[in-house]
Image (tube, rainbow, N blue to C red; front, top):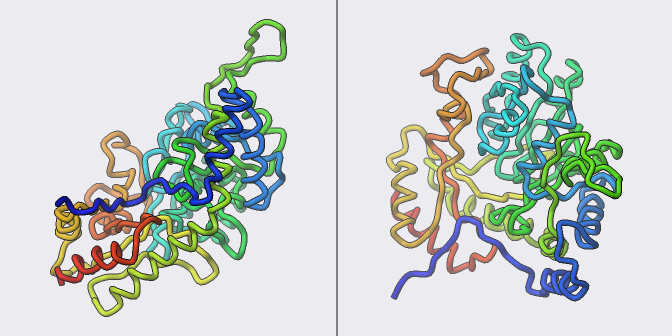
Length: 383
């Protein structure tokens, strides 16, 4: 008999059927379109959840689309420099190139694995006038926002928060995604809540959010005929997917609780294995623990690949830590800064070290206690 498949992170619909009710409403009203009541309400309800003006969220087709529109709203264009976390998924950086701008990557620090404020300062010494800073809250763990905001404000450069992985995470009690000029969330199928595919852009600038809504509906002017004075995009979220999102939002707090329990279960299980530590976080933060990630000591007798292969043999999904953007072939030639300054090829950065020694563990909220025991038992058996 085949062994049960355990996923890294998969969609988890509510037991109460909230999602189906909203989707049924869309079908009953025949509102199967990229706009509608679910879209409007999802925007309002998410904005309310993260504590901003309910008019200040735009539901889009993907988190990547939200990042693209944030950069466009900031006027990022050809020849501009944009600072970006290196330890992240490519969707954080790709939209910089959509705007014909140049990404400059910033190393991570060890206390949260997020953008290092000291490395950011070094980048400003070489590039004093970047158009924006794109900060990622890695795996749902908030970055050092106070320090990074202080640097951005000192240089009068706007911050864009890539909170794709950190919806529901807080820093000093405030939601990630609401500290910068723009914040983006993702509802991809593996995120803490999902709309299958989708994203949200938030800002304290109501007028610009309205402008984004105009751009993402093909920049169609108010006229009887189809009139376009600007280039537009087909980035709006569908009414069906927004219905799923509304239902998912009702169980977000429950999912955060479940993700946190998974993280703590791993942490407690591995506390006596000196070679293992879990991703750290600051005392003044509350991560959503979207993914629980372990780090092996440099001299560990067990390698990340051995752990991933052992679990794979048992039909259990894992993943390496994100390969840093400054090491990606597509971004070859882009500058990269560590806390010591501009980095040369061949130097070991914090980002690369975390990539080499980290493993993303199964963090599916449908995992049973038996599933967790199975995963943990396999890993412990290697040490």
